[in-house]
Length: 192
Image 1: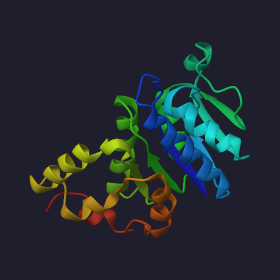
Image 2 (image 1 turned 120 degrees about the vertical axis):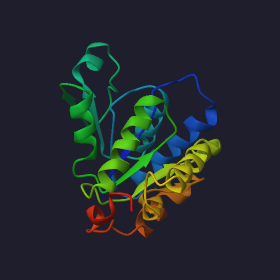
Image 3 (image 1 turned 90 degrees about the horizontal axis):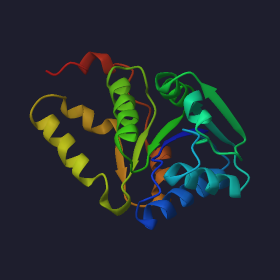
Image 4 (image 1 turned 30 degrees about the vertical axis):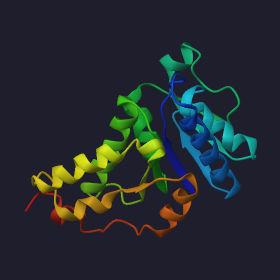
């Protein structure tokens, strides 16, 4: 399985976030899955990659050329693909992925996450989307998304497009337990 992980690059974060990201990388590799992520070497990006590499996992980084020029890329990856821009990076991350995992992050991580959710709503992406809720990071977002549904900006069915897990050890079982999104997603993409 090819697992896309959205992750932040900030290194100025609580160590618990880094520990969880590293552990997720380890679990992905130990399970024999491939990790595809943004290609960075710092913060949660570096931690998840290092965790997978530590256990011989395949780690594919997708990095815009300008970031490579700034030497933001991870030097030890199985494969580092350089792309023209952020738009192409997001497309490549999601293409051929069997699941998405969103670690805590800032605006870039949230943008990637919301694009995946939007594509799922529109019947373009059908695979699991799992939010790792380390330190309760995504609890407020989950509350907000319920409000979005309550206010009729999305349908009630849409709450099932993603799942929230509190522990690293729950991520892979959650992916395995999540059925493929409904093929008729476009029939209820518009709010009724």
